[in-house]
Every structure is written in structure tokens, then in C-alpha cells.
Amino acid sequence: MPRPKKAAAPNGKITKAQQIRDVAKTMGKKVRPKDIIAILAKDGVKVSSAQVSTTLRAAGYRRKRRGKKATGAATPVASNGLTLNALVAAKELIHKAGGVKAAEAAIQAMKKLG
Image (cartoon, rainbow, N blue to C red; front, side):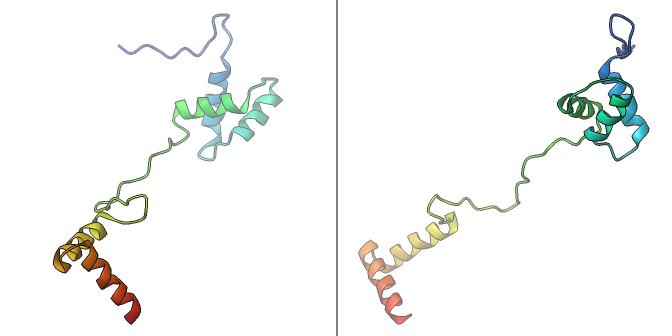
């Protein structure tokens, strides 16, 4: 059997967290800490913005941030901006040209042409 939530402090009063949840419940979908603080201040209850935000998140009123979504076919990028595909293509060029010096000479010739 699940335990009931503690809504009252040891002295029998309703906790600030429970008051925040109660106010948030009456506000509907658009719940802002600023508004909750103002409503509770009218009742003489002083709460901080951090306390309201934390309580709202724990109560499920705030979405949690998610990490960046991974793309399906992302290619790793080296620190100099070259992708794995570019490096494989460079390796093939060096192999076809017959060595690094020959590939560099071919690249220099292409620069002159182009």
C-alpha cells in the first residue's frame, strides 16, 4: 500500500511546498514562479523563486531538459574540420597518386588550374 504524501509539517501546519503545489493546481497550464510567489505573498507566505521552481519540477509542472538528439548518420569531425569521409577520400587519393608527394603535386596542379 503506498504511503500518503506528507502535506503537513510536524507542527500540523501545511508546508510551503504543499502550498506551492496547491496554488499551481489552481492556475492550470500556465504556471510561473513569479505568479505563485505573488499569490502566496498575499497570504503572508514568503517563498523564494528557487524553492518554487524546484517544487514545480518535482511535482511535474516543469519539463526536464533533454540532451541533444543524436542524428542517425552523423560523421565524426576532427579538430581541423575534416570528416572521416574526407580523410578516407584523401587516403584513396594518396594511394592512387602513388604517395603523399605525388598527391601534393596533383593538388598543387589543381590549384593552378582552378
